[in-house]
Image (cartoon, rainbow, N blue to C red; front, side, top):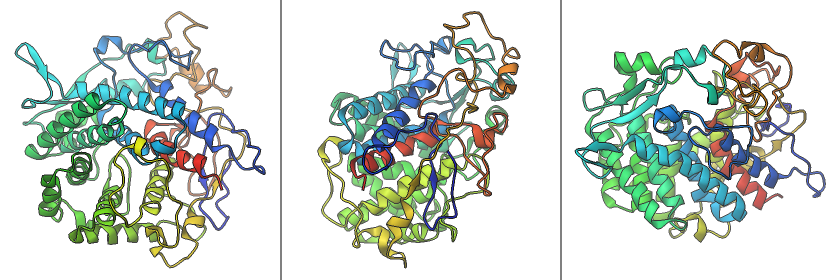
Length: 481
């Protein structure tokens, strides 16, 4: 698929691993199919023992010696937060099967996150007792990135990194709290018991983040294991506000509102940084807290709404393209697109239902919606034109351990060692396994995309690109016109 950013509207490039078939509606794109595929993508990212209903059959069990699913805790927790937010906002308009698969994908992540905060105390393992550490990461990223092998064949060190009171990591603890709190809302109708467990875990993780303030990238030992791939560049303060905002919405506990009021300035609420992604939550905080103002009229929260307005009105280049310097630009496109949609569909009205199942429909953006505070009257129309154009990328480069670019275990049962996968990495042939629904990093500011596997900044799909896309596609599938 190619990007045409010269159009006077936002060209949100969807680089899906399989080209979407046009629907019968006058050549328009099939957002329902795109939604289903964007959810299916997460099944290709699973680690651990796969369930019987695994749909991407070329994947197999992996990481079993870790004792739990392995992953990078900070971006993974953000993925869970955004997937949960997609369900909370738009799950009520998803087809039931897509909603079920979304919750299954979310639970795969939150089960892992619960394990990261559940540590043995005597003969028990509790998440509602005093927390001594939070698992940050399993694996050695430098050695992982030096190999090109299937997740089923991982033989690199499975080093465990944790944050503790003496070696704090408020950003990963805060994002874990946000993910669990958001997920508790997503599961409230489907599994009330699990939702309550998630909320208890969120509270515990937040208390740890707030009690032991610090960034994991400031610790020499942790930095060596996490950087340069997932350093914390923007500090931990935004994650404390972000998690407090999510706990406020999930619990309706006034203490979290007081926390935001008493600590907002100290934690950078006035910084008005126009960024949103796994490392910087400022724009997301403003949109999330703006919902509290718009739905509940808590007057002192108006400053967050004003910051959200400013963010919405300064996003685009004159040609309408969202672009942020650095690699994997599609992470910015999908995350910011999600914020735009949530903000545009939030109405200043009595509090809305807090669960997906209680939200049968989502109002379309209108002249009265928050998005139209910008000077242009056609803000929403400029912001929500999507271009899905063939052909799809054939050479996506997954974050280690890769899978789709190597033969499946069923086709080549023998071990593929660390360097034995290099010929597949360097091959110009298409991946032997289709990673359905994957969104790659996308083109640079020149709109060029060469479909080159080694160019990972453009070719690498990630979970945190797909997670916000689920909510966006759910909306457009239900509101195609």
